[in-house]
Image (cartoon, rainbow, N blue to C red; front, top):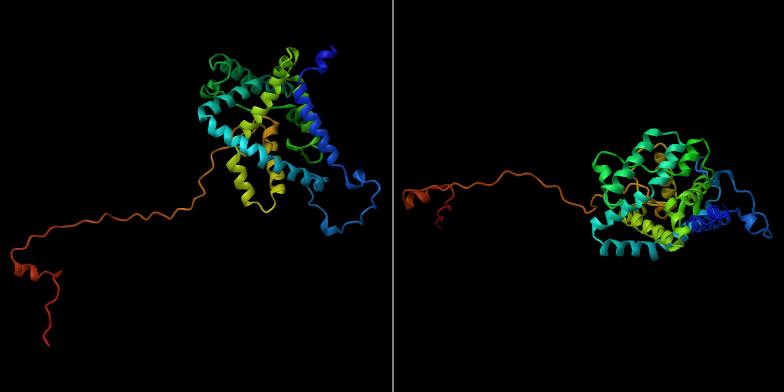
Length: 317
């Protein structure tokens, strides 16, 4: 019994809990991190953060966000670009579908915990169809058959049960989160059958490979969209915070969302972002009538000289 509770999902638990704990420690107030430092003077009321952001650790979160941006530019984006160059689109789609199919047991369990038999039936139907007709999930036959995909996890279950998200957290590498979703990630990691099998058969590397591939695949699907958001944002941190919350709210309501994933390393359960329109400026195309020509036969040179197109006769001095 002890082995079953401690060994399954060890990689996922180590990554999520370890990085999450780092984020929580980094998010401590300044007086908790530096107890010997003198307390700063109270900030004026005008400098107070916006109400409703629920971001009491914003300064620490911004520091972690800056670190995540450095990791993203130095590692994640180059690897994701290489992933798109090396593997053609059909192969990448098959990998994405296979990873989504591996998530089906966790999605089904949370569908049941939320008392949603309609969603549970869809998840079970998709898993059976894609595992059999889809050759283990490398082909998404279920979507073509009219069984839609939806994501679900323990964090959404907690929200359905009425548990609040808590303060906004920026986790190292993992990205935007909150205490409720962080705890849900740990629970899902323990209960994931794929992680359990990998741990029981001493294939822990398989769980790491699965998580890394999932993050690279998800990041590769959001390169242009996130780059455009960063280019047009006055405050990229605040934009990502708002984007992550809106996207999570849509997932909790089980609504289809097409916003880019601001935290790709937290899983490939999200729908891929739609293709972004080209940003190259184009001049408007003016519709003009085609030019036509008519050949007129003249009887003589004199008739040609009388033509309105003939040059005027020279004038005498």
